[in-house]
Length: 326
Image (cartoon, rainbow, N blue to C red):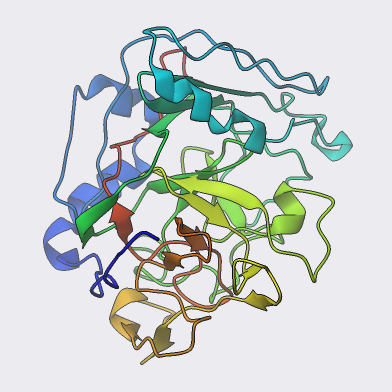
């Protein structure tokens, strides 16, 4: 059993000092982002890093075939734990004929999981923002095995905190400085039925995750599958899970954060972590040590929806791949 003290409530702060720089990272063109050799902000700010090398790997595309490569370019034995099988094959949605077919490649190298995708969802894209959907060369990296840190750390105020199993980015529980400054987009109803929408660069991303949009074959009374990964390497499950090792009871895990004000704007300032003794209440990061002794996150209906903080040490990801940008 992994011993882990409950993380202390952690939230991104310093909005008034960082809004201008964060807005740059959120709204600048991705081509400009690639020209920045490195822009690494504090843990309360978005980290922007442009990757500079091409890595070869297999691809999952509309034909449903998945090649993951051997993931062992440097003889790293951790490749045996590569979670590539947790990423279902992607296929195009007929309604998205105007866009490229979705692609996905997953492999492991040097103790990292490497996920490459083109940012196109495998279900009908319904625009809810003025931003058109664009194909983007994403490349994400995170540890093969998550490791609990001595202390939790803040997730970025803006930008990706992890990825879904279709290779598309997951953002935190707030928007940018306009039109509703740092408000909760789920609460404000500006995400689609799968919890996503497009940003100014055309990048489709999630603010919450739904099992039915990312996996299949799981009933409402079964434990939820893995539907994403945090950048600290820990998996993200749907809301349901086993209460004990024998799975004698399947429960819905819930957030320990409570609403203290109106999250239409400044969602973090209008929530506080309360927690409780109920074993279904998650820690401030929206995770827990499960009955099998492994730490993982759960998606919840309430704030922060996916992640409240990092329980492990996150890999810095901007996600921009090495290929040509649209």
